[in-house]
Length: 292
Ligand code: NAD
Image 1: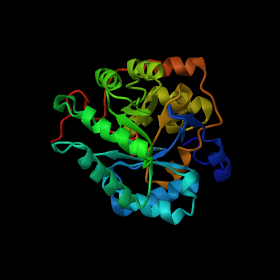
Image 2 (image 1 turned 135 degrees about the vertical axis):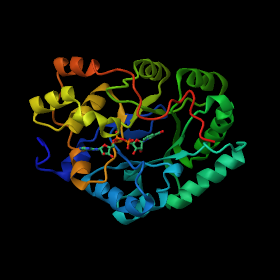
Image 3 (image 1 turned 90 degrees about the horizontal axis):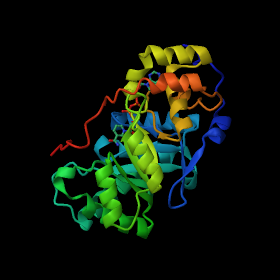
C-alpha cells in the first residue's frame, strides 16, 4: 500500500507530534496509542512497540484489563515519567452505588496495576444518564484532581445534556471529552459545544475500528497523496484539532499511524470527507448504554 514503505524516522516523529493545551494548562500529545481489545499478555509488546516508534501518550482503561501489561511496557521503556502521558478510565459500568471512597478505590487499583504514582488524565468511562450518578462520580474526580494524583480529569461518551448539567452543578470543567468520532460520525454539535466550553475533543475509534480503511472515497484521497487510508483519516482528525488514539498491534501499522504529519489535505479532500458523515456508530449509543 502507498506510504507503508516510507522511511521511518523515530526521533523526528516524536518531535513532530503536536500538543494540545488542556483547560488547566497541561499539555497532551495530539496523537496517542489506544489499547482497547489488546489482551493484557499482548499489551506490553504492543505498547513497547508504540513507545519505541515515538508515541508518548497511551490510552487504556480499567475495563480493558490490560493496565498491568501497559504499565510493564512503560516501566521497561526507560522513558522519563514526565515525558509520558497516560490516560485511564473509571469503569462505572457495574451498578455500584458510587461514593467518593469507591471512586478512590478504583483509582488506586488502576494506579497499582499501571505501577504509577499519578495518572495524567483520568476519565469517567460512560455517563449512564439513566442512573443519575455521574455528578457524584465527578465530585470525587474533582478531589482526585485537587490532590494531584491525576494531572487532569475528564469524561468520555458524555452528550450535550450531561456536559451542560456537569458544568452547571459542579466546579471543574472536564479537560477532555473522549467520544466516538470518525468520518462517518463527525460529531459537529459536540465539537462546537466542546469549543465553547473549553473542553478538548478526543476521538475514539478514529478509524471507525478499521471500517473506514476500505472506503473508496478515502482510498481515492490516499492514492492522490501517496499515503495510506489510515494516514488520510488520521491527518483529517489532526487538521480538525481532534486528539486521536488509533489502535493497532501490528508494528508496521503502529509506525504508519504515526507518520502523518508531513502532508496536508486540501479543500476538495475535506469536502469529500464531509460527505461521508452519515452518523453511524461502531460502538454503543451513550444515551442508552447501560452494561449492568
Ligand atoms: P480504531 O479506529 O483505532 O481502529 C483500530 C483497528 O483498525 C485495528 O484493530 C486494526 O484492525 C485497524 N487498523 C489500525 N491501524 C491500521 C492501519 N494503519 N492499516 C490498516 N488497519 C489498521 O479503533 P479502536 O481501537 O476501537 O479505537 C482506538 C482507541 O480508542 C482504543 O484502543 C481505545 O483506547 C479508545 N476507545 C475508547 C472508547 C471509550 O468508550 N472511551 C471506546 C472504544 C475505543
